[in-house]
Image 1 (cartoon, rainbow, N blue to C red):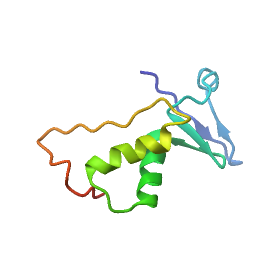
Image 2 (tube, one colour; image 1 turned 90 degrees about the vertical axis):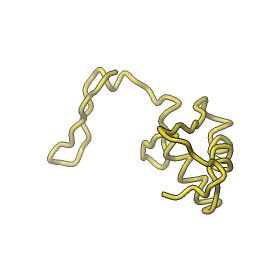
Image 3 (cartoon, one colour; image 1 turned 30 degrees about the vertical axis):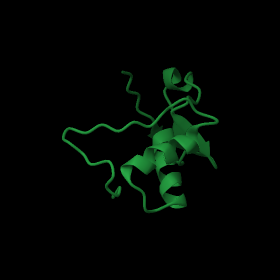
Image 4 (tube, helix red, strand yellow; image 1 turned 30 degrees about the horizontal axis):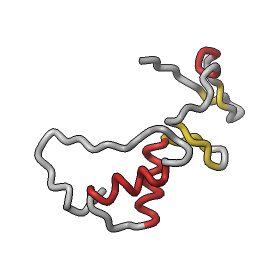
Amino acid sequence: MHVWLASITSGGALTVPPQMSAYALTDVDIDRDGWIVGAMSYALVQSLSRRPVQTYQELLPSMREVLRDQYSQKPRLSSSHRLDTGMQFVI
């Protein structure tokens, strides 16, 4: 795993280490109006914006639909304990 720290200059500019700038946007990053966001975060927000009340079973396909045409990532659900996927998803 690579961890690079970007910093903001006193003028408000974002400085990025050279090794980080070599990384182009990947399928885990989405550029929306100049903001870089994670694909899963974006899919979750879009899915819940379109349909605020969903079960876990409905949410995963809904998120996959958001990402399907442009990104290879697929949302998955895991839990450390037994989970009724028919329950409503609540943040």
